[in-house]
Length: 143
Image: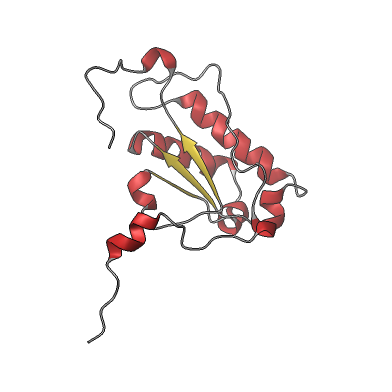
């Protein structure tokens, strides 16, 4: 009888499903963008959402940019749930052409919506702002 390796063994290795060749990797691998006037109100950060959409518009409008040349797939993850996800999706639908959305397979969702999925580029909407961040109370256990 043949037995498959336990799934947990594969998950513990932490490897992506497909490791891109050096020529396929985007550079730089990480870009952080500070949004100076971003402010969380309720469960959304309107200014951050607008900045994220503007960044994507600028990147996809220039045919010399790597994202356009490679037709890179794009995911946008909102770390605070559905309200910010809905806002970003609404802004993207208003700002992008159908061709851009389809060519880059742009998906906006929360972390659970990306379980088991991969995108060439992932943008994170942190939502939080310094004045709206709750203070950490208690102890954090790291294993």
